[in-house]
Length: 377
Image (tube, rainbow, N blue to C red; front, side, top):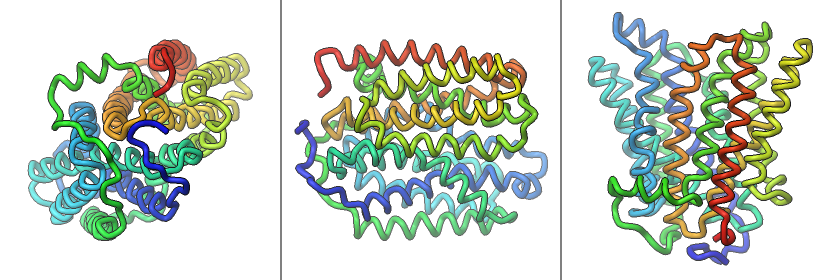
């Protein structure tokens, strides 16, 4: 058994489900604003309301590693409860539709809560899972954003204020529920509070940054393709199908990871993606269905990255740092991929996908080779 692991023989699936539901609330922190931008534009005429969405991603870019360090320092239970409380308070303030500068300040605060949630939740999910179920649980976690966004798209109404109020209530209610449900003392060892030097340490330690590297490349490509492939291939139906294909691929990661190491799933997934996109470029008549297949494989890449965090790192503190790096590079990818493809033009979607797939395969092969040199911890 790895250092820092519990001797758990059975996975507490009810707690896993509650933590996954909390992840859906975290996804809603993005979705609620994305889906009410029209209402915000009416409420704040002439203001750059789109920045209310990207402000959360900027928090991840700047402070992802710090979120991992804070989680490693205070433990995931305290981190999750504090993040839900912060998110609920910030959301309640947003529901009042205050002056735009204050709204943006509240979004930054909520972004901090979001960041801690997406670092602390998978850290705790890995800690409480039985070793045989850990890859399955991490594959499930990899779907939280897509599933949360899809649910929000079905349920969110047109008014910004009521949507924000309901979301704040969900965060507060989940905080109370988890205060009662979450176990105490799961994390055996903790680190000091994070410092700027943690970035240097983390990115010089392959087992900590290898999963993040693959996830950042995946995120760079995924959102850009979901945005532009439907237009590039003249297939509007892809807008709804591509995210679902990615979710299905992530769900398949758990069973696959019992047969194939997460590192091989990530590297092999990038190779397969590049190959399928190359065939799609060569056979335009089949480009749309082949793109769905490629995005299915991309979900395996995403799930494999999350599964690689506990596979490479035995202690909960190290897993928290690795999840912090994963959040940081994932936000870098999400923030940058779509503007790059926009600059290249929608017609460059398939060529860019091939190039990024090849780069992802090479970069992750090197990173995971360095991370597993001398064996997995």
